[in-house]
Length: 186
Image 1 (tube, rainbow, N blue to C red):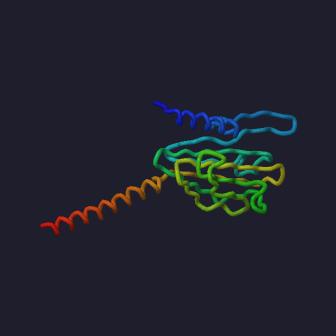
Image 2: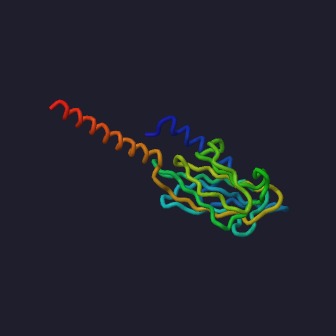
């Protein structure tokens, strides 16, 4: 049974996915114009064993005027680890105002920002706090570069692991307290 909130989440996600130009893995729309060939990029993916995604044309130069949205979804109670390959090059700029990769901790463009990256040094390992990461690759109209290749995998959610660890520690203290109380009364 789907609850109203779940339906709202699904509809909002699909609308955002459509507006972002993201497509199912392996289906890219292509249109030809007189000045340039436009290829939509991006994907919403949730492969159980993890995966890889790249900027358009990687390892060749990415095309100008692109915005690609990649949404990664983990199974419930899992988090995402995202790694960028060492062969990484995004047009450098102050505060990454031009070409950049933006990573957000959640499924939306308004989710909390983890970081914005550009230049020649690949970003650090990125870990989500929940089951979604939203990644945007943006290229303006000038100075293209090689782009990126990123791989991701899934790990147990840290919050879930801490909750069980905390429960285990609390139950141990509680049992010790009960045993001490029993010894005092006997």
